Length: 303
Ligand SMILES: NC(=O)c1ccc[n+]([C@@H]2O[C@H](COP(=O)([O-])OP(=O)(O)OC[C@H]3O[C@@H](n4cnc5c(N)ncnc54)[C@H](OP(=O)(O)O)[C@@H]3O)[C@@H](O)[C@H]2O)c1
Image 1 (cartoon, rainbow, N blue to C red):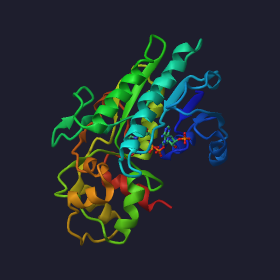
Image 2 (tube, rainbow, N blue to C red):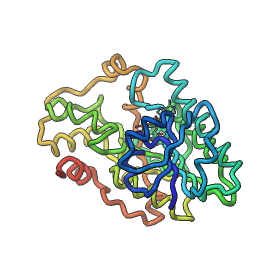
Image 3 (cartoon, rainbow, N blue to C red):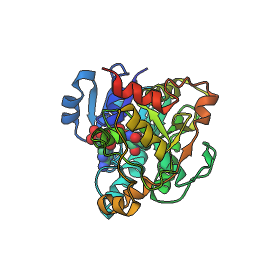
Image 4 (tube, helix red, strand yellow):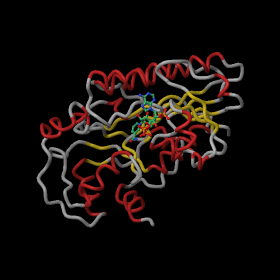
């Protein structure tokens, strides 16, 4: 499998590169990417997703494209300029990728184009399957448009899969890396009443699932990339504190306090998303870490 990866310098992309041989990478800053990713021996091409079509020469001999690039949702306040970057990097970025794929004489077999559980909005206790309609709000609208752009690449010869990625757990990046210093000081606490569901996935299961999606011809369209046992925020908080052997002493964090410090992004932390990986389970995907306590034990106690 010869794979091309966008967003390879990011948290998930870097972990994915470690699982690929002779990867091709598209990055906004090719020189920095060559340096940062030298351990994976990639061939790097420059590409600014929002501004230009992807370079066609990068796709020579490529049979799988993993498209992960996008402005970070969690870093920085959602100013109007930031929201524009969130949209442009994903919607225009995917359009510019697909424009190139559509012109190739030998297109890749499969495009694995990231999406997110933000697709579902805020849905209480409802179990959410791939066929359920999208929710409401900025992230839901963004995910709908992002997926739609990628699906324009779907032809008889190009299969398109959209992993709707949940909260990816690894001590090396993403939400868990941000929570660890707080919980290690014994300062963790639930967000509000903590009743909102969090659909999480162990990084190794996410990588396995994306690689399965690349190989399994029968998979196309949305695939919920979440563990089969989503938990409430209260249970997540309790489990993380227990795995770290730390007490939970502080009162819940009220929404207004987080909104003051983080801005609009804070709202999404209170969205309830009980997402179920129906397509992955139907495909017989063997989750290595279906339960949160085991996943956290593995991530936080391995040497
Ligand atoms: N981590 C999670 O829990 C999670 C959950 C749901 C969905 N996802 C989605 O999965 C994908 C990968 O996640 P991640 O956590 O690895 O992301 P990340 O660490 O933020 O990395 C994303 C990469 O995208 C590129 N990028 C950043 N800002 C950009 C911009 N304004 N325009 C174009 N490209 C830009 C960068 O690569 P270069 O600088 O090399 O171009 C960056 O390394 C993202 O699309 C994310 O939305 C992640």
